[in-house]
Image (cartoon, rainbow, N blue to C red; front, side, top):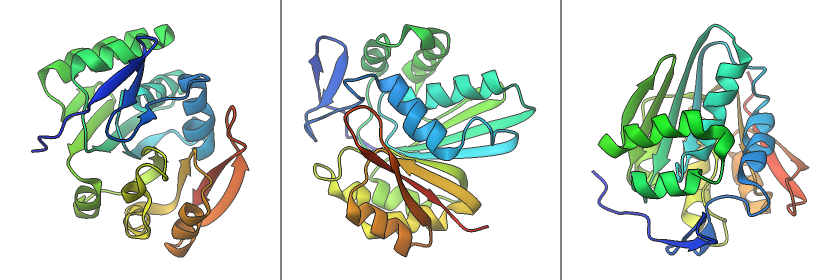
Length: 224
């Protein structure tokens, strides 16, 4: 069990900033819109939903990406399930998560359910056809040991310049090993060493237009 906790400062009382990594948890220009652009559209979602679809994520943070995926899955209305696995080294408390998610009133119906569940524990939760599993600990150990595979990856650690351990070649290789044939990955960063690590791990990698002030982001696909 991970005994590390998030240490936060708050910008404008809403935007959490990690003291450990001196980086905000979501875009100052619009976190939900960035999630939709980078992680949903970057993985061709919601068009790929259907059947037993699996998303995995590095860095659960506020839960914003999970909530956006959950809402998108429900709106798509396709039969099937969504299993969302996230790896988190410095979990927030339910109170902190609720405070951060209050910045996104459109997500309130989903956020309220998440915060209530997290107040009991941060682990596995079933929300009807949507299942969340948060795996606590150092991602460099927990992800390689994971026995699952993902159809889509949300690579959302803090900035590579401030949290290089989450973007190393070894971890990107582990991501590739846990990606289904034809699976995808997307991230807000276009750092050259991240793109090279993904390519060396077996992904076909492209640089795509970024969100807000970020000129570029990265999209990757595992050959089928």
